[in-house]
Amino acid sequence: MSDSFKFEIDGVEVLARRGQSIMQAADEAGIYIPRLCDVEGLEPQGSCRVCVVKQNGRVVSACTQPVIEGSIVENESEEILGYRRDLVRMLYHEGNHLCPICEASGRCELQAMGYRLGITQATKYPYLQPVRPVDASHPDIVLDTNRCILCGRCIRASRDIDKKHVFEYVGRGIRKRVGVNGYNLADTDIALSDRAIDLATCPVGCIIQKGRGFFAPIGERQFDKRPITLGILPVKERSEQ
Ligand code: SF4
Ligand code: SF4
Ligand code: FES
Image (cartoon, rainbow, N blue to C red; front, top):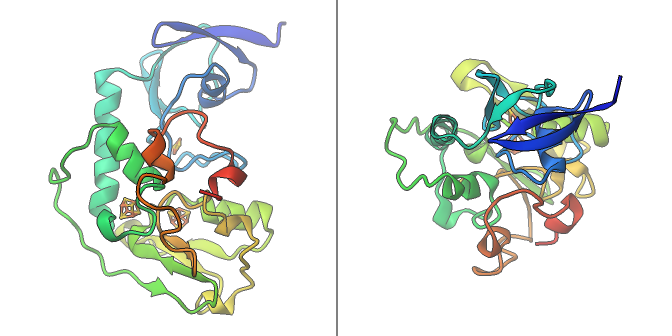
């Protein structure tokens, strides 16, 4: 049995290898499927659902769903774009997002995704305006959970790459948030060299390095130059911008 086979994304024939997710095969073919909880170098978690597609008429998350040989995948249909807009809108409504004063503005994947999806107003749902903690106890790092979208990228990076387990989900339902393995950040063994702290790990402005705020001027920020798409710079280069 051959290791590779064909399937279709929005009418384009794509080659996949057995065991690949829809997203992996799409990436290799140069077709962008939007994502927020998935990032290069970390195991997919399948939680944000922004990568929603239809495979043979069934709604699935592209980052975790294996490609089926000969399947028909819808990525850019109006129905799928509508789902993604709603998912991204809800992320804005669940947290406290004040982009004009946010350190991550211009390099934030949530903001860039909003632009990409053409979300021009965010008044479809009520704002929850949760009261969430800001942990500035550490000499080098701030954790501002007001902007957290619960993508789990910091959790996986700390657990799987740094081998430290600094971050974890705490609470349930609407009170679920990211907490740290200690009373506060200063109580943990987190370090600036950790992958969890790399600026490309947190997709929003939740994990901030002290002394590096607003390091790129307007016009020079990552998504000033181009919209969020496939081939966003490799992790190491992205953290330099
Ligand atoms: S994290 Fe992103 S979406 Fe939230 S306030 Fe900052 S720039 Fe805006
Ligand atoms: S702190 Fe950042 S990386 Fe961690 S879960 Fe929240 S948004 Fe994701
Ligand atoms: S990128 Fe697939 S569920 Fe988040």
